[in-house]
Length: 214
Image 1 (cartoon, rainbow, N blue to C red):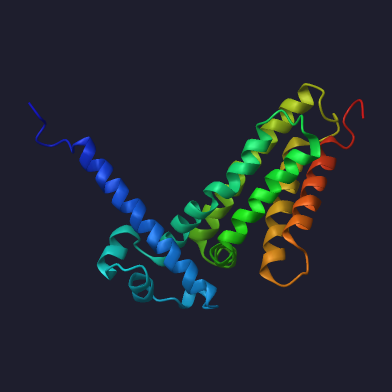
Image 2: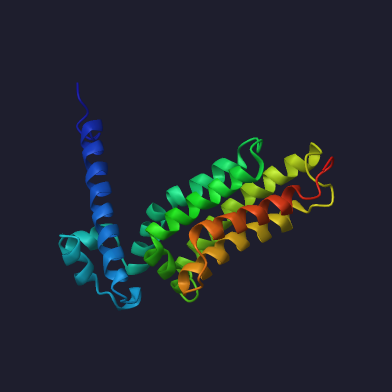
């Protein structure tokens, strides 16, 4: 006999699909509004709701405030951005510098696609506690992955014993995050490919530049 209280799986799937579709519409609307040069703090909820073709009440059903909106939009926008770098750190690194440059190229492409939103995230993280905690936590998870890989490589003798995994993870993560943000935050004259190659070379030399046998 069917349960009278359990939500059918098909109903849950329908709800999830509706939420995903709604979130994508909101993401596109927010990025379009930011592209006009309007600061995120000055974009009213009603304007976002109208631009995304939704009711204000629907917006608040999913996002209690604009900080939670920005955090969720950042989660959607950075999923692919981090994936390429995480994949490289989990690989065997047999393709040397070319592999990490490809990963940096993919990150930069992802950042460019969502640059207005991610620059807004960076700006609000300076004074919004919830946004700051989200972004710091996301970066900390990435740093921990890098640290773990460096510890394993050092123990296996694949990198120099002098490398401090924790400190190096902080340096590499911060270098990538700040370099991309600075390059996109103001005119620098640095192209995407040049930035990808510089970051890839910097990461490779830091990790493997004084590896045993080189």
